[in-house]
Structure formats: C-alpha cells, structure tokens
Amino acid sequence: MSEYRVVRIGFDTIIVAFRATIPPEMREIICDARVRARERRSEEPLTLGNGLVPGVVLPNGVHGGYDAVFSTGELGEMWQFKTDQKGDKWPLRLKIRAGALLVYGYPGAIDNAFKRLEAFGIRIEDTRLSEVHVCIDVVTDSSFRLDDSLLLRPGRSIVRPYEILDKTHPLFDDAEPAEIQRILRGLRIQTLTIGSSKTGSQTQIYNKKDETVARRKFMLFKAYKLDTDDPSWGLWRTEFRFSGEVLKKRFEVRSFTDLERALPAMMSWAAMRIRYVAPGQADRHPTRRAIHPFWQAILEALPNLRANQPSFIPVAMAQKALDLEAKSTMEATIVGTAIALAAIEGIDESTAMAKLSSFVAEIIDRRMRDAPQTIERKISRAFARRAGKNSE
Image 1 (cartoon, helix red, strand yellow):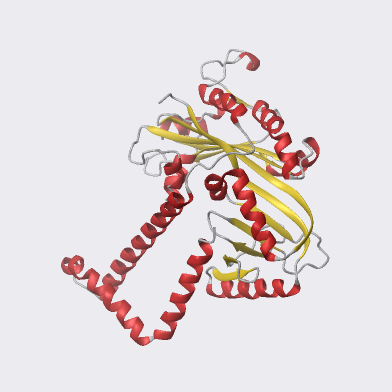
Image 2 (tube, one colour):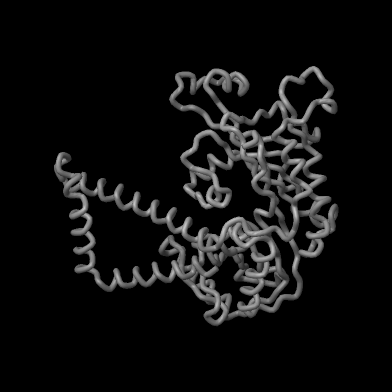
C-alpha cells in the first residue's frame, strides 16, 4: 500500500432538530420507561409507533434539555426527547449514528430514520439540521505520529492536544514541558482538536486505530478490510464538525437539500483553514512550507466526497461483527467474575482451572431454583433489548 491511503470520506454523524408536538400519551410512555431504566441502571426495552419501532430507552439524557433518549441500535439512531415540553417548540432531536451511515450510506440512513419518524406518529412542523460531522480516514504506516508544531491554523483558534503517557517510565511524575516529555518518556499525541464546538467549526485529528482497539469495536476494520493482526499499519481520522452559526449563516444549511448543495464549499473552507506541513521547514515562511503527505492525501480526497455516499459494509456482516464483539466482552466478564467468585469461595488455586466450569454451572442452577420468576423476567428483558438493538 502507499504510505498514506484514504479509505473513506463521508458523513460520520448528522443531528437534526424537529419542531413538533409530541402526543401526551407518547411522552408518558417514554417517561415511564426512563424511570425504570434509571432505577435498574440499564437500558429499558420499549416499542413505539404502535409496535412498529422497537428500541431501548437509556437511563440518562443528553445536553440541551433532552431528558429521555430512545435508541434503535448501533446501526440506527438516537431519538432525543424533551418529555416536559412546556412550550418548547423543538422537543425532538435525531442523531443518526456513525454505524448507520457506515452501513447504509447517507441516503439509506436518512430514509431509515424518516420511516421510523413517520411510524412514531409525531406531527412535524419544521426540520432543521443542527450538526454535521464529516470524516476522512487515512491508513498510514504504523510509525506515523502527530506533531502539533507542524499544524498551521488561524491565529485565534485553540489547539488542544491529547497525549498518551508511559506510566511505567521513571520520569513519569516529572513536571517537564510537553516537548521535553515527548523526548524523555515517549509521550505521543493521540488527538489534536482545533477550534471549539461553540464557534460552530471544529476539526479533530485522532488515532482511530487505537480508539477502535480500546473500545473493542472492530466493525470499522472489517469495512476497510484491514487485518487486525498486522501491526504495520495505522489508521488516523480527520473529522470536520459543523454546527450553529457556521452551518446556518455561513453556508445557509438548514435542510438536507441545503447540505447536499453546500457540502463541497463546507469541506473546502474547513480543510483550507488549517494546514499540516512536512517537518524540517521551520526557517521558511508558513505560506511556503510544503504540505505533509498525510494532509495532501486528505486534500486530494475532497473532490470524491458525495452526499450519496455508498455503504461500506453489508448489513449482515456489520451485525455479525457487532454480535461477535458483544459476545467476546460478555464471555470475558463471565470468566473474570467466576474466577473472582472462586477466590472468595476459597476454592483451591491448584484446582480452580478444572473446577471453574462446574462452579459457574452450579451458580446458575442455584439461582434458577431460588428465584425462577426473577430469572424469567431477566430473560424476557434481555431478549426484548436484543430486539430493540437489532431493529435496523
């Protein structure tokens, strides 16, 4: 492969606000589910739209006064509600998730979301795009590192680096400047954030491979056909975020039609405001410094961005990847908990390995005998949550 290869350019997140009237009975159903979710500290299964839209209600709300969130799964959307409307004319917000845009593409993800909205039976008076994130993913050599000194940006913009520290290094606690820390203890930048979401324009460059591995969400690697066992490559994402006044006034984007029209201008403006230059040019005027090949690959990919971006992975393959990830996490939790319980029970360490499977089986059998109704309710809730998360 070439040293810097763009594997995807497309939408990562789209947030839409709706001027609407939520029926009182629907607000009541959502409120009741939110109370149960908070009491149990877990997602609460719920079906909306006369049984047509299964999903789960999260135990927490989100910023902006949206106190209830209804999710249709990682390949779907987050529907955010203000359940106590009190004259607020914009009580509903839609977040089309990254997984939906990756799997269904832009047109498919939008169509799915609005079919669910229609099934809700909510009267919509107006629609307004609130936030748009566009990502460009670049495969690099594993040795690629970000250097904030190579980043040229508008003078008043804020740059916030996020760095990984080697805590085992003897100099970990030294209060040295960041530049010295990077030399002495291998400190490396994982994320560069330029600008603020409050201004309506923010760019973030970050190590997508490390983030994906840490979260154990490998669907993206499968979509890009990247070998997780191959250490020779890295994956870095540049994410351009538009919101607020930049979206509404600078580019006059309020609808999806507006977005499709303004998309090339938005991306050109955002990408040209900052430059990531090649090293070894400190003595040159900033305007004459050569662009780094990493950033050059991004600039060359911009003309390929289209609103009608395709799917990057089949739905069945994506769901299988998500299921395997969830299964792996759950199995690790079961084994780890069983080992901890075995230690508490005083099982001899030398025989713990041989007795572990029967020990787990005994616990499950005892629980089923002692509280069969509780187990049945938990089984029902687990299968209902599964149906909600797979409602795509």
